Image (tube, rainbow, N blue to C red; front, side, top):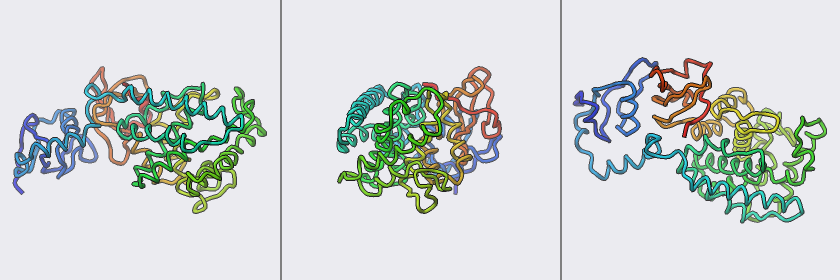
Length: 368
């Protein structure tokens, strides 16, 4: 294999890297045989690498069509100043969905039947939009408000559940079913006494026992619907069960807890932990992901957790972030095994911090 060192500025999209590229990292920042993309070039610039070993036979043989395809494939990794994190159209779609869901919720309180088709039409445009504007997943908690929280939470769980199903390579029909089930998991809250549901102080043991009945109510409200598959109805009923048997309503465990219920469970706990509540401030998405993976070991399906991490934790190179110590910086390198703890170049000093090594720090939020 012939290779040559060429200047970074002459590097063309689609060129093949000839050797692993190491800097001051335990593993290569670029692996041998990687194809050159915009993201890869940004990594090289961040580490001040000026010459790159490439496979000669691939330097000049990329067609315009191939280059165009490469650019399209990496559009989500464009710098923040070239591509907005989230468009106004998603925000407006989200707000409209929250209002529509909350109107339905108030109807259920009064005894109205659940219109599954209407709910499906509320959630699916958001799932499709979110899969294009992927940084939405790390920002959902910023949209959530204590006012109409049940609607914000239900919409977010539906979006995340559908997106995890897509990451698991489910069919389009399964994705639709999964997103709809995630949206409907907490509809039974409409049957819980509002004095308990909206309580501003700590819940008593009785209060909590009443809250836990919402999974049963949710199931009862949709059990006769022909538009939702039986496995999705079970997932709604089971979405607070845990693999170690510590959940409710039946304390089912292991194989008795369906993977569909685990998808909703992971989406539910992630959004709840990252959202502001009366009794708790919101937490960093990245910190919560680590907690779910580490403290929730044995409770949640690890494959489902890893797909959520792929959705939320893997930030494009050049994403601007706020760290937990108040400093700002940009992502310059992602670790394969720990995407939530990338290498960050600080804005003020230019210092590079490896969050994988500096465990006392974490990403607090993405800066739009």
